[in-house]
Length: 614
Image (cartoon, rainbow, N blue to C red; front, side):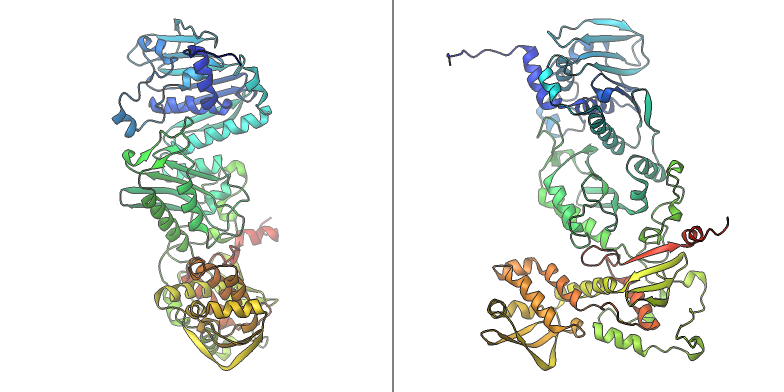
C-alpha cells in the first residue's frame, strides 16, 4: 500500500462519520429531534413519519425557536447553544449538548429546518441536501416554534440503508423512542402519526391519575393495575415512579424504563441494584417491570460518556446503588395484604378503549395495601417468633364454639362488620389439600398454602439469622443417615457453618452421618431430604465465605422443606392463622421461588362467570 499523507477531512465526510455514531436508524433521528424540542421548552411535540421514517420524519414543536441570525449555524457541526464551557458541561441540565446531531442528520438526508421565535415577526428556514451541505436561509410560514423535516434518510449512503430492517421493525424502534420521551416528560403533549394514521395522541399529564393513564396507554393497562407507587428521598437522591409487583413480570426486559434527571439511560449500576431488589421474590428467568425516575445533583452524574447519550457514569456509584437497592427492596417487602389504604390504582384509570375496568380484575393487585396492623390479627394468631410446630399447636388450641360447627365440619364466618374483615378474609374450606378458600370483602380468595407458608417460614428464618442466628432444637432420637462420601466430606468440612444454620451433623463413618440438631422452625420437616438438599447447596461452593454470601438461597431451600406439604388437612383455625400470618409477613405475595401465593376472584368476576345481572 502506497504511503499516504495526513489530511483534514472534508466537512461532509466528517459529518457522515459522526452520523455513523449518532444516526443508526430513523429512531435515532427522532430521538435527537425530540430532545432538541424539549431543550427548547416545548410543551407540545407532534411527530409524523412515513414508511417507518425512511421516507419522511417531521417533528414540530411550540418551543422557543431559533433566530434567523442563528439558522446558518443550526446545521453546522459542533455548534450549540447549550454548552459554552467545561463547567457547564460538567453540570449539564439539557438533554443535548454535543452540537453534532443536526449536522449528522443533514449529512445523510434532505433536511428542512424552519423556525420562528416569539420575538421574531416572521419565520425562516434553512435547507440542506446532504452533499456539500451548503445552506441558504429563506422566508417561510410558521407559527412560534420549530419544524424539522427529514426526507429520504441515507439516500446518499446506500450501504447504511442495507442494514435497516423492514418498515414495521423500524417503526417499532421509532415508537419505542417516543414512548420513552413521553414517559420522561409528563408535562409535554405528544402526538404520533404513521402513514397518515394517528398512533398516539397524548395530552400533558399533570396529576398522578393522568400520569397513570399515560403509562397505561403507552405500556399496558395491566402494569398500572399491578404496580406500586414509590416516592422516596435520601442523601441528596430522590426516586419516584412505579414498580411492578413480582407476580407481574415478563420474559424479556421490554417494560423497564429508568430516567436519570429526565434522561432515559441504560446503566449497569442501576440494572444490578434493581435485579438485587427483586432477587428474593421474582420467578427464575423473569424480568421485573418498572418506570422509575432518579433525581440528583447534575454534578453527581456524567452524561458525556457516549455519543448516543444512553449511558451515564455516577460519581458515587456505591451511594446510588445502595439507595436504589434499599428503597426498592423495602417497597417490595411492604407489599402485603393490609387494611386501611387506597387501592393500587383508581378504577377509572384504565382507558375505556381497552374494554377492561380496574375493579374487574382478580389477583393480588386489587387488595388494599398499607403498613397497618389490624386488631383482629393480634389476638387470634401466633406470634411471629413461634416455630412451625408451635404455630400448628397454637392453631389447634383455638376454641371453636360448637354452635358454629355444622355436622359437615364447616365453621360459620365470624359475625363482624365490613370494616373488620381482614384483607385475605376468613377461611371457609380447603380444596384437595392444596388450596385454602377464603371469603373476603371483595369476593373469593384462593391461597396456595404450601407456597404461602414457605414464604412465612423463610422470612422468619432470615430475620432470626440476622438477629441471633438460627435457633436449633436437639432431636430426641438422633437420626442416622447413609450418605455418599462427598456428602459426608461436605458435612465434616462445613460443620461450623452448618451450625449457624441450625444443623448439627456428625460424621459417624465414611458414608454415614448422624443428625443431632435441626432448626426450631423446621421441626415438622422431613429431616433426610432437608439435610441432603442443604448439603447439595453447600457442596456447590468452595469456601465458607461463598456459602454465607448465598445464605438466602440456603435458607430458602430449608424453608421449602419445613413448610406445610400438599394434601395435609388443616382445620379452619389453622387456615385462618395462616391467612393472618400472610398479612403481616413481608413479601408474602410470592413464595421463595417467585410464584404467587394467592389470587382473588372478585364478585364482579364471579357474576360474569354465572351471567348474573343479564
